[in-house]
Image (tube, rainbow, N blue to C red; front, top):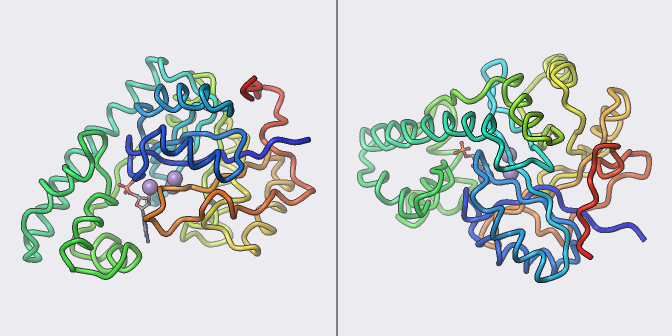
Length: 284
Ligand code: AMP
Ligand code: MN
Ligand code: MN
Ligand code: MN
């Protein structure tokens, strides 16, 4: 029997609300047998996740979700089976952490101008000292009553043309893939249906990603509709990508799919876990 894979999930090391241990426990309850922990631009949750997974008898794939700027758009690249001790990877991530610190200060300055004081300290305390994300600002704004939920708060404050928006200056596509490759990992384009790209732009992205050594497309994502899944299954076949499956779970408070309800990969897909370089990480 094939294992049940969830290859995209977040912990409190980035903007999830579950600790690595609690995330692993939730995944087990949801029937997941191989889980990838893929925090935004940070690997700090992996050691605890590995311990918890070993104890509970599930497979743990060490991963990362790297923020990339491509053609003025923020794109997310998931790295699977990375070695978190890789120096090139950590030096690269350190640049993204520095940008996140500056951006958080800038978001707070802009919100202050919009007569919303105190957001930096609050966001930092939601972040708990790891990386600081827009999600942490969003939680503060919702708690203060500036918007009713996470969806509304992003729409009104944290996206382009809104008071708390600061354009991303993340990694180049090519460098992000180099970091992943140096760390021994496989690069997967995360939630491809989420980017506001024209069909032509999307094809350019897929081509550039493949040229840089990308091998996988997240065909099934917690944020994909059935239509998205079929469309990206076809694109994966057309471009020769392996297909990945990941919930993008951020914890029970968030509007992301619970891993238990994630659809299976369509049968025509070649799963990323059948890639020649995939190491079996199923717990024994
Ligand atoms: P950042 O990497 O700091 O810019 O934050 C991006 C994160 O914000 C994403 O990974 C999501 O977790 C979250 N996010 C972005 N857009 C939304 C939205 N519309 N609703 C809820 N969460 C969102
Ligand atoms: Mn996130
Ligand atoms: Mn993402
Ligand atoms: Mn994610």
